[in-house]
Length: 248
Image 1 (cartoon, rainbow, N blue to C red):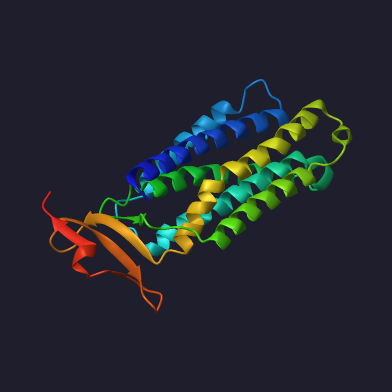
Image 2 (cartoon, helix red, strand yellow):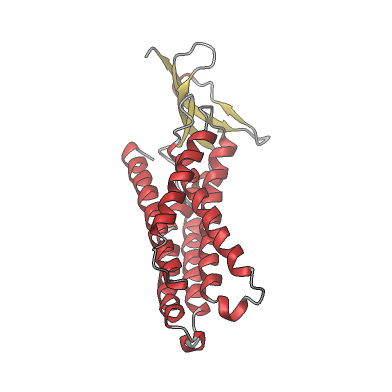
């Protein structure tokens, strides 16, 4: 991936994160209408997650394992968040214990906090000493592209199928409106998260990763390539053309 691709992907992550917060606010307002909109609460939550990210994410060296893990967990967290929206929308049908909706809402808040932390991890703000990137030649195979297409297609069909019920059985107008809203929002989230899934597959199948950082001994600007060895361990490629040191 080139510099332009990186910038576009990071811009996508920022816009996608904003989109998630906006639709969460609308969803919560439809489920539980109040005089005070949930926007204020979510803004406070975002501020808290931002400060928490700055506190937890100290400057360090990124590892291939963390590079792969954060991309895979981002996809999983979006799937969980979508599931929470679905369960919360059908709460009058499937949630018997009175405390179940509260657990769902708390789960949504936790996942939103994680989205902010995940965004900072993707941006690599805490990895100035050693930051990893996909190599420019990284590609998915035709089979992987097919699996990616099938995965998101089946999820979209599944999301739509879950809402193929008579909305009138929810009785309350706000719940009916929310059901129609979440039906299409879940499909939109699924489709919009495709680049994230693509990145996770790319990371999972990576045999090489570019890096930029500071050499631990010379303290010079350092860039090169890490390779995955046959034993599964990652090591810096010592081939002269694959690494470089320079004064900064």
